[in-house]
Length: 308
Image 1 (tube, one colour):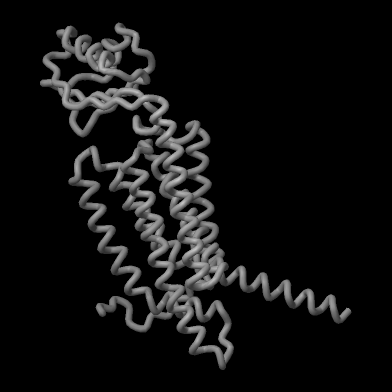
Image 2 (cartoon, one colour):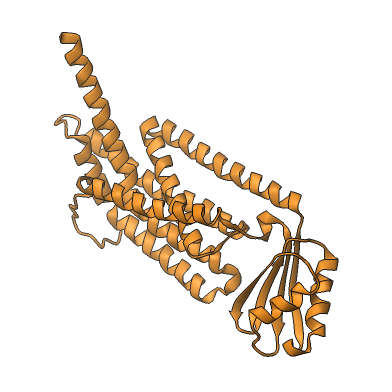
């Protein structure tokens, strides 16, 4: 196996307080952004409405497009440049084929905009959007529950809960990054979040498996859990970093060269790879160590009270 770290002995667990503070800062920043913006910016998959992708022969101003659409009174619309000053995405709250025709007719009649081509039209009804939101919650919830049951059975309940906390950490950081960069929460992004969950827990399980091996070897000399966990993370560090770098390079290439349609998906995956690797090294193991210290302290306090 390729090794990029030879006998590493970094004190990851010893730096866990700093890791908690860094994670709290990023999560607070992301959650604060979502609160200030009234939640995530849901794409048409979840919010419902009509999405129309148009392309003009020459660059046009968004204000000119908006002024044209205001005259046909479709209600509030969102107009975004789509990777080219001649190409735009138009989202309106209404859905139906007649909405697309109205938009096309209005843009075609406006001579100042020049010739226009309708490249894509998508319709999602409001009820379908709500159903997709509910199904997204179910998908994430069932995935997390399955992971908790597996790790609790394979290792122990503490390991399962610590892994779930690390997953929530990764998802919150990724959602916060989406909010801070004004990106949409869409079905491809949901797929990216589910991929992040699987990626994060995979690395965590590898570290837990090594911890179990180390515990068996160190049982006689009674090494503290913090030392064993630190050893497990260091021993799997090369594998964790190599996996992360491979995935990171793939998602980065996808982000820069995959086109606008895949950009948000690739962005979420890239952030997820970074935070998933970070949580494997710093969050999951640190939670187990602090939980163990708390449990030991509580047991010791009970013994003292019993003797008193």
